[in-house]
Length: 54
Image (cartoon, rainbow, N blue to C red; front, side):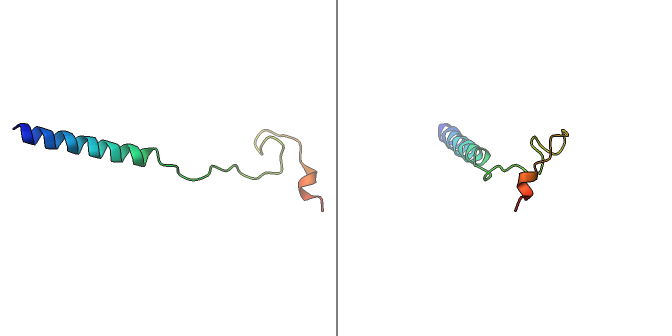
């Protein structure tokens, strides 16, 4: 019985560690959407004409 509980405890720790490693894994760089507005397209900010200056 003690051997069975020891194996279950080790398996629990291993599986928990694996799940935590997957949960905290980085999903890549977080980027923001490119827009022609100063504060985003939703808030009515001023148009940035220098984005299109050639």
